[in-house]
Image (cartoon, rainbow, N blue to C red):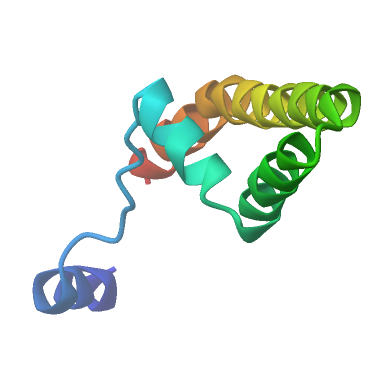
Length: 90
């Protein structure tokens, strides 16, 4: 036990603080993924060539995918928070 106390004094507490980011920050991080940037480029090219149906389809599927990923991240937040609280009890 003395070894543990010495290491805590030398290195400090061993914990990771997990903060919940605002939704707009999570969305911006998600759409900055190269895949979604390519999707945006595809939408622009399709609209420039008057393929409005395809561009709308790509836009809709992209929005559904981003929404689903953001939802999953927000859903997993309580689990991460609970894990953090369990580890702080040591």
